[in-house]
Every structure is written in structure tokens, then in C-alpha cells.
Amino acid sequence: MIILMENYQLTQFALFNSFTDHQLFQLKKVMEFCSLPADMVLFEQGSLAEHLYILLDGEVAIYYKPYDGPPLVIAKILPGHVFGWSAALKRKGYSSSAKTVRDSAAFRIKKSSFSSLCDLCPDAGTLFLNHLASAISERIENSHLEMLLLLRNGMNTNSEG
Image 1 (cartoon, rainbow, N blue to C red):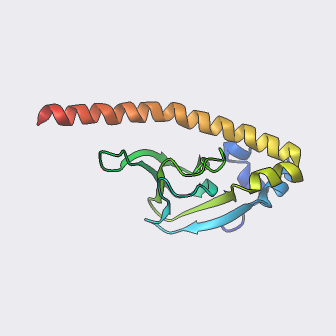
Image 2: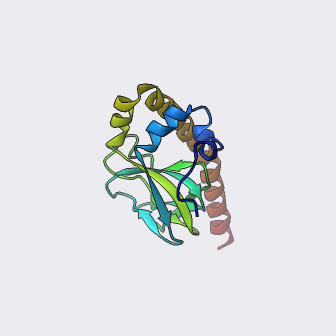
Image 3: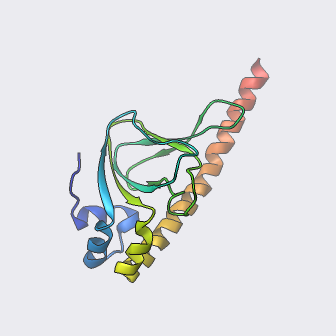
């Protein structure tokens, strides 16, 4: 498991690849390392959105529970990707749940730390927010296909019975 990441290790993830050493140093001030065992629920849908996570190692499943059915896996998060972005969007609660699939490691950033990052190092804060916006919009675009497949599978299941 990764405990301390050097700058060159971080820049291998697209989220960090254009940061200077100084910017990464400033960013690491607001990030907390988390070692996450398999099957750990990180947050529940509707719970207070307090942290944004950046997965470093392992895998996390994102679940959405519709009011009229069981929870559905809507995304699998792999290393280098972000989740829990309800906190970054300053929403009150998470719109989905997250649970580790296997032993994992992540950085997490408190919702309140986003403004302090921009105060501490405006160029690092702006760059991070730009990268985060790109990551979120890419994830939303990819989730369209995942949702379409879920709907198609549901139709195939219903037509058989």
C-alpha cells in the first residue's frame, strides 16, 4: 500500500500531470492519505458530503439507490480517478454511495479545504479545479453508456419473465 507519494508518482495520474513541484507541495497540504480495507463503505447516498476522494490504488464501486428498487452499481472507480465530488460541488449530501471493492488507498480532501487551497496557492487551486472539472465531466459522459447498459439489461430481464 502507498503511504507517501512522491511528486513524480503523483504526476503519473492525469489529475496531477501538469502540476509543478511547488503546486503539488501546496496540494498535498490539503490532502489526507487513507488506507481503505475491502468492503468499506466510504459514504452513503444522502449522507453529509464532506470529502472528495482521489483513488491511488485499488477499486471503489459507486452505488445509486432509486426510491423504488435495490442499489445499482453505476460506476467502478480505478486508480487516478476521483469520486465523492458532491463535496467539491459544495452539495449538502452525496448523490450516491461508495464502497471499496478490494483493499485500496486514496487521498481525501475536506470540502472546506478547497477554498484554503485557492488562498494558499491560487495557481495550484485553479489548476486543480480545472483538472477536477475535466474528470467530473468525463465521468458523467461515461456514466451515460453505463446507465444505458443497465437499462437495456433491465429490459432484457423483464421481457424474459
